[in-house]
Image (tube, rainbow, N blue to C red; front, side, top):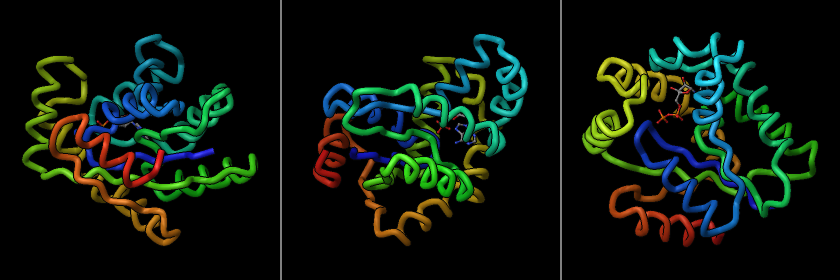
Amino acid sequence: MSHIVLFGPPGAGKGTQSAMLKTEAGLGHISTGDALRAEVAAGTPLGKEVGAVMASGALVSDDLVIGVLKSRLESLNGVKGVVFDGFPRTVAQAQALDQMLASRNESVAAMVSLVVDKEELIERLLKRAEAEGRADDTRESIAKRFDEYQAKTLPVADYYRGQNKLVEVNGSGSVEEVFQRIRQATGV
Ligand code: ADP
């Protein structure tokens, strides 16, 4: 199993590159952001609990997200590995993921960190806001998401660096260029 954690700030292209890894490299894809948005859209009790938190740009609680991740992981079958997109976003989540995988005799092969200038990130997010109208792609929520990223998510890179699993990939350029860089860096 070749599990990859796709890491980077909001707008870095995690969702786009995950889709490439799914179709071109045969990996399963778990996006906690997509999973949570589906709960909100379906109006489930979980969705009702997290909708406002997500719209504000704050992180959802570790317990809730770890539960969502676990059920998605258990329902994935017949894949060569999984791309984790938007998870782990805190060190506690990274520890929970390690434990979950260890209980299956599996582990994270690499964390791919997509590196993109902040100016380009904001430009991409505002463009996406026009195209998709995501509730958290407002200037205010974008600012909050960057704050959360700095404070809580950046330390996750150090966590994987400590395991010698961090690979930095230039996330600027065309979707195909970035994808080829990821393939080269990870061998998937
Ligand atoms: P982004 O483009 O900001 O990376 P995502 O779609 O991955 O967006 O996540 C959107 C929102 O969903 C986050 O701002 C947060 O509220 C919630 N969320 C997604 N994944 C997690 C997670 N692992 N831990 C906590 N909250 C999460």
